[in-house]
Length: 131
Image (tube, rainbow, N blue to C red; front, side, top):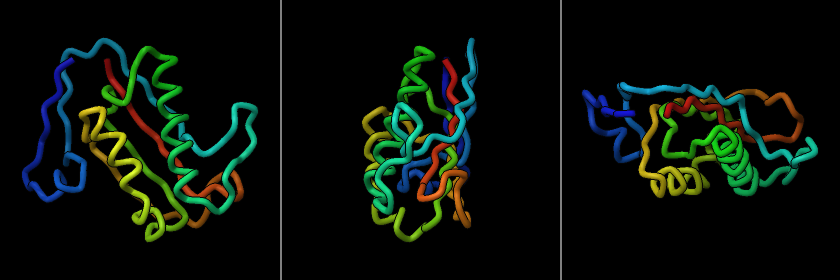
């Protein structure tokens, strides 16, 4: 797989995401459903704790990627949904750090929403990966 960043403007690169990515030569595409801070048995965890929920959501995203033989390095699109954008930004370094360590800056969208599907959840990560 070959990735080419598309950035007609460059301010987004400093924030850890590309405006777009051209992917060529991929053989498989994985569409990852929204991942939240849920336990292995489907119970919500870390009620009210954005930092802990964000970290576990990333772990859960990585688990899905891993099960498909991929990693964060394969992520080309990441949508972030949160019930509190301002609080998420206080902890965004957790996500940016994990993406940076994987050497990726996927095209991204961050949306503030009224609530998520599971009461008490503050953040949800949805992605697309190619390999």
